[in-house]
Length: 161
Image (cartoon, rainbow, N blue to C red; front, top):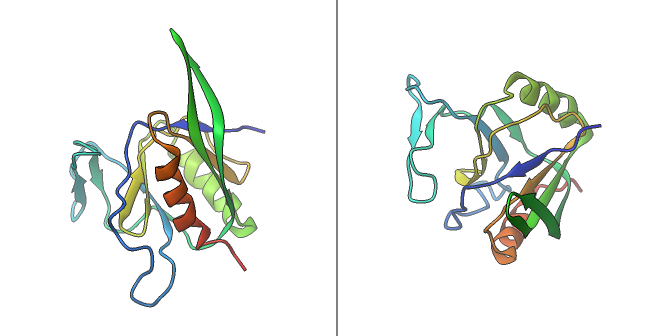
C-alpha cells in the first residue's frame, strides 16, 4: 500500500462560507491545474496562490461525503539541513469514492491539483503517485495548527452520518 505525503507550499483562504445556499455542507473539490489557458476556464492568481494556473469551472473530481478527517501535529519532515514538525490533515474517503479517486489520481500523476472546499481554495500540491488506499495525508510545513484545525472542522461537515 502506498501512503502519500503531500507537501503543501500553498496557503489557505478562510473567508468563504462552508454552508451553501441550500444549507448543505460544501463539497471537497479537486481541479487539475494547467499552465495553458483553458476555454471558459478560470485563472488562479492570488497573493496566497500566485500564478497557480488555469482550472476548469467544474471540478475534475468532487467528494460530498467523507469517512473521517483527522489532524496530526506530529508529522516530521526531514530535508537537507534539518527537520521540521508540521500539521498533517488525514482525509479518509467513503468506500464508494475510493476507486474513482484512485483512477483520478492515476490519470493525473505529475500534475498540480487544486483542492478546495466549495469555492474556497485550500492548497495545491503536485500529485506524485496514484492514491489507491482511500485516504490522503496532507502535510503542510509552515502552516499553524489553528489554520489546519479550521479546515478540519469544515471537512468534518462532510462526514457521513
